[in-house]
Length: 518
Length: 87
Image (cartoon, rainbow over all chains, first blue to last red; front, side, top):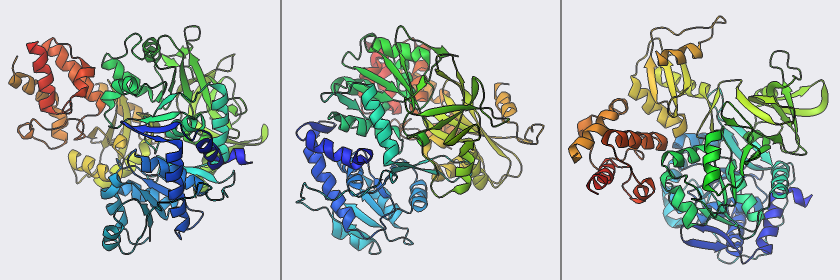
């Protein structure tokens, strides 16, 4: 049972690899022991707080040592961690706190201004674990409690009481109604993923892992946990410039790479993917959005012909659930998009005919089941019922409907064909166009709103608005910025006299899209 | 090719975007950061530089350029292009 609890696995790694470098941020390096001590100090502080045991611990910070230790500390304290994001508007972070009912916030010193904004909400008494000037914070926000970190901690730690079914982390993805969907991923889910990935690829103690994902993106869990359970060093870029990742790979001697394909496209446009540019990169993983075959080839050349792995998997199925190894002998692709590969051994899949909701032949909506697949959204039975279904033909299994249309070939390899709903991907982030519509409706004061994703040189969201509107384009965009994360802000608002409708009376988004080409 | 010429070309290229952000072209200072301000995302920024390369028949060393702290500011961009032109 302990094998199915992330905190045990982490604790084991902390002790086993004690003197190895665990994390490097810029030029600063911390060992597994340093990380263990800091994580324990945080877990004791969490223990001291009086906030409900079943609510998650919010992690607020930059990619700092305190933030990563906060994640481990929450797990060691047998709690769920929920990352916030300093780049999100305060309102968005506030919404995540409210929906999750988190009572504890772990904050690093770079989060000061966001923390102040979140703490102005005095309807909740937050317990804040912070490594800073307690007196200053307590004076300013007397209604909240500030818990300092202890200097001396015992390495024996706390008893781990988490259960395999308890969530290890809670993330939010874009929802249709303007409310983000809470995705609780259990210890069992995440250890199933880790067991598979650690056995399928040969990660080593002397590896140096990249860390390009935001912590609000579940692929960061792969970075952190695959790295540390292998005894390797997590190399965190010390500035967030996407333009400097080439020198980061070289200077930090990265050996295991993981990012969204967009990063590779950017490097390609900067003419940086030259033959053998990244001679030290042994393994390259991409996930989060379709990987263009041309980019896979370019990357392969840059890493001296080594294999490039395309991973696929929605947050609900824990990080990734299928893989395709792209190498000179295996270059399956469709419409220029690299194959998604086979579903991981031990996990199950089913293609659903979207009309009859019965199992389909070789083409249909991909549904997933197995130990990596969650069974419910956070506190939303209606949504859960919609996305987690049972199928008469295969009793006893709960299937998650991904909304991804795929084709399966005779080898069992899957190919991405498109989306079945209003969800699109921007830089790897899942964006539901309806959520953008909702924000614009609120801002513009009209119901007739439809957003579309346009693939020009780069993907962009364009929103159409008709009817009475009180605000202009820039005001609406300005309002959206207060509600939505940066990757959901429309590039343009276009006012139209009348919305084109489909035969069913719905707004015809395809027609709107076509009107842009005119 | 002089600074003013490059400046004018970039501002012209960004005309629609600037209007959207309610920024009049005259307000743009040298230290205005095209990416950090949210005006362009990283991909659109590189696309803009590609347009500049084509217009002025230059080839930018992106890795070297990205090391400059003011790479994404209007003035920083112009510096990079000017240095190329004088090389």
